[in-house]
Image (cartoon, rainbow, N blue to C red; front, side, top):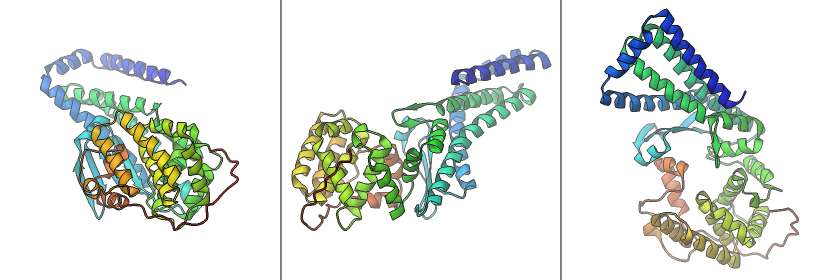
Length: 390
């Protein structure tokens, strides 16, 4: 059944329900309209924003409850500008710039993926949460609506509040069926997690704190034979995770990762296209950092020139441009920007970082990552006959 028909059927059902109530309770619609008009303007404003917050909260708590049912612990619950996060205990923070998102998010905490069953468990838990929240939200609002029109239709403020709850619930349900530029509604994401192993692994990888050898193997296997120039965000996510491990954890160059990165570094048009997505500046920073750690100075210089040219030509805020520019030069030892990088300033790499920046352990990790990169010991250059596409 097409989406527009689903909502048309729901709309017809609600209209029919109104007329049914008019037949059962004479003057029902008249009393409802009178009550709606009786509420002053400021009352509608309070009910409007209050019910919007309530529906968002209900929706995100449903996500959280689904994870708890599946025995998965939680890291963050965000509702509009309120961020609830757990370190030693639960804390709350307020970040008003997140209001622009107009919604919320729940971040689970996944342990290491050591075997295939761990991955399957996390994917099933994520899928369950994705389908549970929008379903619970719309069912709850419809039940509340029916209870209201049967028992409390003469109470004006309850009726108005109930209609706002239903309105926002319908909007949330509708947006759960949409997708655009890497963003997926709950229903769409649910279907992709269940049917697309690469997408499922990408989603799970965002919430795994410790990456095991088995997990690394999964990322490498997904990356093999997948060209980076097709700009699949899931593949680029895997690539970024491997680069982070190579820069901060590995004790020697990874032959596969180094060759992949060297091929990318020589394809200037691909790097330029990647940099047109402002969320991927961090990825190219990692590319430069890994090449620098592997003593590939000529390639470092080439990619750095491209990076700074595209950065200066972008529409990013000046403060964001300054951060990227100073950060990469600091990481590869071209200048000492410790004071700048350790001082809070107006900078953001995206939604996830805006939220996680309130976690003490995340801030500590970011400070550690702002330390200059230590190079691998120089060895004989590795040459590979790599016939695999980038």
